[in-house]
Length: 354
Image (cartoon, rainbow, N blue to C red; front, side):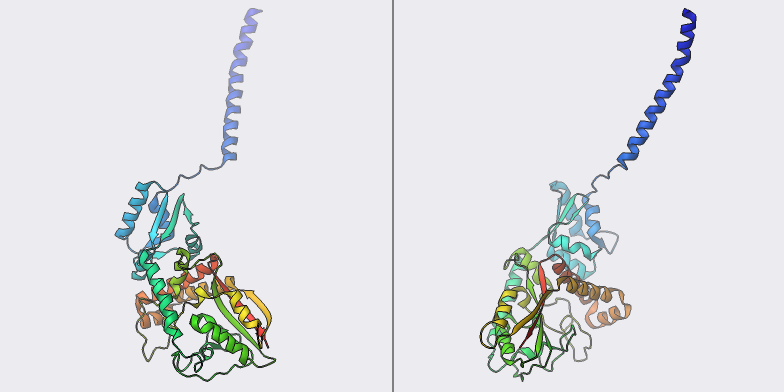
């Protein structure tokens, strides 16, 4: 009896071990399937920066190589890019932005790549430049005698068009005859801020009964304070271009200096504009107010893509304004679109009737 039991035990033991091994293998396989692939470790600062920017040569510009070294040694997991350096290196052709869809997150300080936060560092010189531009723009125009000058004809558009009509003389000091046609379409982004209120009052008094006017304009978001870092970011695409060639008599392209941008988009207020139009003597009736920021951003992005990818348009622009001017214009169009997408700027369409 004892021998028989020993033989049975020796026979059963290998089978039990084999079953246990099979069960263990099955458990390991199932657990690996459920847990999925192993998460990647955060990449280094170079890989994170490479996700946003692409060098146009084999090596990074020296300043970006130093930036990566500094960011890595600081252990803050933050890459802070100088805004001046970024704009200059893009215009010089040293680096390119890989995807302009990343700019809204960059402007909102929400861009995180592989565990690294990428931000923009604003130099003090930029704040001073913006302040000088805003102040100079306002006071240089406030000296104009508004009793003898109408600002509105420079803003006239054909109905349902997106570009202001060119005028024979865009000088603010030139006497202009004033007339408002039915269903006039006006863009106040090119109107100096000191002319905004007089022009709105003039429109209110001059618009013929039974006719309407469509007004388009840009305002800063309510949380963008004057001369704050966000305000400076918003001012960048409205500043005079740095790399555009001087205008020539045979210029036929809508280049960076075809129309002068003003500081009005950074100072205008929707509430104040509506108040001036709809209150007081000869007040206008408000028919519609629309926030078209998303559509406006999409239009800017499409125009920037066309400037970059349409070979004939790109070649013609470069002939007129140079490589640096083309890169700058492409950057500024994408920059402005990103400001609207990030909610830092807002685009409005207002329809009024008399």
